[in-house]
Image 1 (spheres, rainbow, N blue to C red):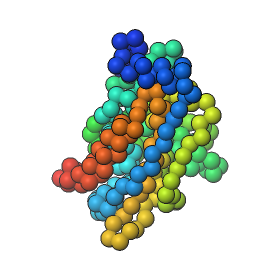
Image 2 (image 1 turned 60 degrees about the vertical axis):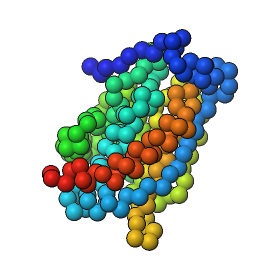
Image 3 (image 1 turned 90 degrees about the vertical axis):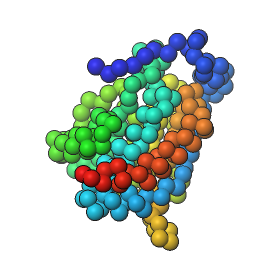
Length: 218
């Protein structure tokens, strides 16, 4: 059973902002696009024959889980802060459509990677929208390995009450001696501000830079 706590909005430090973006002003989502230097990460995973997509999924999820603002859902009329959120990511299926898969987050990349490989093997050939039941506390993350985009935005038609972050990462491309990938983060302003997005990108770049050092002995 997943752990969460119900936010008492009247006692929440964000109460005024939350009500501003849910009751008084129009529901607002904001998207930030940031260039990431993935040079060291790409070199490391290629040398170790680790799937880059899995490493990026874990790095994004690990960083999002560091801030409670990204672990919110509105479920059964309750504003919930979950102990962890899990990545829901699309896989191109045999019908040339996407099927969403989900891997449970683990603080240890080794365990996460094993679960990722197991899911891909177990659910190979799955079609339809979902390969398995998606947990309530999942968030959408896509790695578009074929498109080195420079910007991305979401036009959410009904974002009210949808508080999970949405992440897009494009194909990396060379710039001088570096490899660059653009990462897009979309969040609902009711639960997260530009500050939280900035902290996410700062931490994500740091995680990317240190990933090889952390798992060098594997």
